[in-house]
Image (cartoon, rainbow, N blue to C red; front, side, top):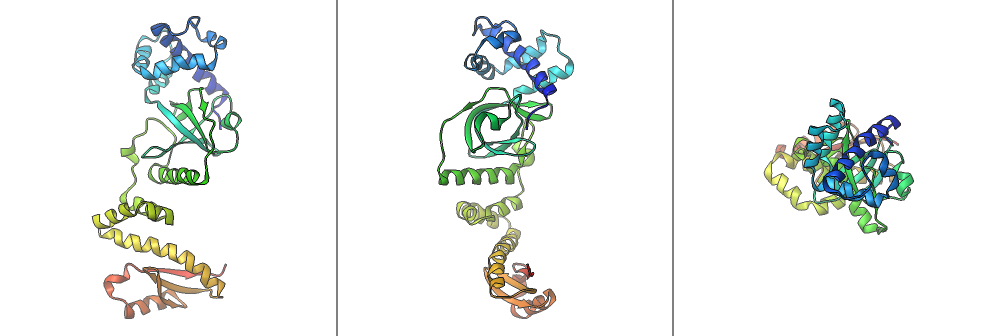
Length: 295
């Protein structure tokens, strides 16, 4: 997914003058005095200007304050928003309909929905993902774009590391969703403890990886013990349901507690009546009841 041609033209009409401004301040590249001059220089040369810009983001404020090209208020607002840039290494992880996912796999993973400019990311780095790149992400009118310079790394990833990337992606989506605008604050969207627990229990791999966090949440709030049993009940129900169908059972109800089927019946009411007889009241909230339907 790319920006519209109109928006791409606007982006460069604002971005190149900012780099010219940086060059005039630091005299980095001789011969760049206007946006038209960029056509004469390689990406490697131009990247020296953008690197200096991100080392001195205060230049964005001074450019907006001076407004040497008499940009409109809205145009200055776009330029001013670039103080919220995100610079670093990312995995181009997935091509989706509305954007490309750039995955930051740091300690607290985040997934950004990024739009390309003139050339689609797939044309630049290919269809085989993930690809690690050095990039700068910028806000642009409620969207996220990159600044037009992308440095891919030539490396391949084995099965183990690819699984860890997928874990990071799932964690990022679970905690923050796909981030589609900047600035982004983790405090505003940090998931609830209940959502965290559901994520930790989601797969065997997660349960092994986050067992300490699971215990901490359950100890923190006794109500999470009920959520734990209900979520684990769903997991066991999927496994048992498959096996029960294989042996010919359908259209029945089952109750699971701590991974064990403790009751069954033709109706949910029947199963609940059985539970009243065989299970202490304080344990009933931990039971997961499910219906085995005919596929």
